[in-house]
Image 1: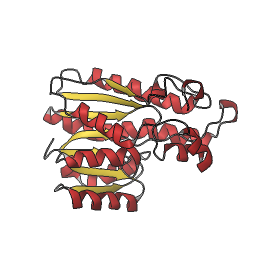
Image 2: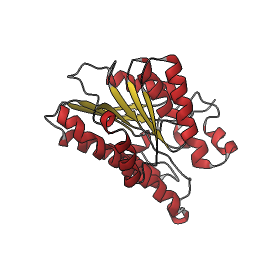
Image 3: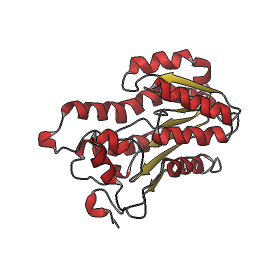
Image 4: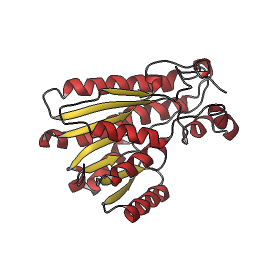
Length: 254
C-alpha cells in the first residue's frame, strides 16, 4: 500500500475521514473529495503533519457527473494512478413513510448513494483496467439486506450498492481488480444528524448501546485492502453487538 494512490469520496467527515487517515498511516498518497472545502483542508493539514504522503483535496458534488469530470481532470495524472477507490460518499435523509416522503430527499439519496458511486467508478475504473490492478471498496450498509420502517428509499439505495458491487465483480472477472462491499450497522458519525435534522432525535439512535465508530469501519476497510492479492472479500457486514437487524425492534438497549 505504501506509495500507492487512493481516492476517497465523502472524506470530509465520518467513515471517509477515518479511512483516509488509516490509508495515510500506511503510506498511501491521497485524493480526498467532498463538498466542504474547509473540512477537506483540515484533513489534509492533519494528515500531512502526521504522515509523509501527498494529499490533494477535490471539492465537488458526486451527484453531478459534470463536476466529477471537471474535478478529476484537474488531477488527471494522479487519477490515472489510483489503485484504491473508496466509494464512501452517501447519506440518508428523513424517516417518512412512502406516502408522506419528501421527493427532494429521495432524489438526494438516489443521486448520491447510487449515481455518485457510478460516476466515480466509471471515471476511475478504466485506468485500473489499463494497469490490470486495483481495488474498489463500496460503502454499503446493513440496510442493503433488510428494510427498516421509514427507510424504504434509503434501503433501496443500499440494496442497489450491493447489486452494483456484485455486478462489478462479474464484469471484472479475469481482471486483476478486487471489489468489496463494506456494510456497517449503527455507527456514531454525522449520519443520524444529517438524516434526522434534529440533534435530540439523532442522539436517541445511540442511546443505551455502544455503537460502531468510524475508526472501526476504517480498520475493516484496511483489513480488506491488505489481504493477499489472490484474496477478495466480497462483502463484510459489521454491526455493534447490540444490533441484530435493521430497525428499533432489532436493537437491544440497556
